[in-house]
Image (tube, rainbow, N blue to C red; front, side, top):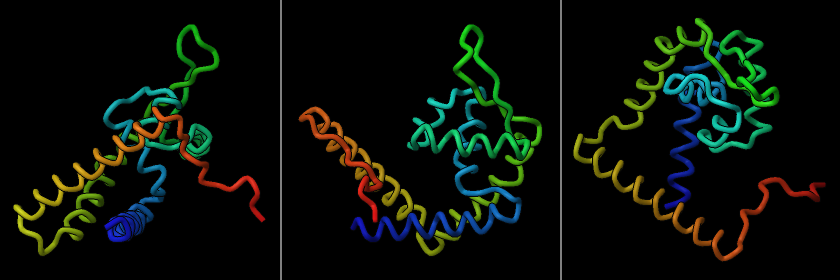
Length: 155
């Protein structure tokens, strides 16, 4: 099951990446744009949490997005260290171009599945995610920490 889900997620990401590239946007930038379209003005920490990415990864992506003119970052009032990301006009305009590309990738992926089959699939995947998140929280309560994804002793 895990292998199939991983392969499906990889195929989804590649399909969308191909489409986003036509507008000069990377998959990583897409993740942050989607979050900001739903809630502009978030801090780097809030963005990294919502994207399930590390803060250094978020920082790199946001820096590039700022260079491209998709966002501006401003310090929060009363806090010189905490920056918030705000979409520029260009960042907002990308929404009308990029969201249809994501819909196209989704439609392509579920072609041949009935509405009922899509509903069952969505429910099953949501339950699986919930079950695995519960397992991770239970491990944390037992004192188990998530191992780093990069080995400290890489050759």
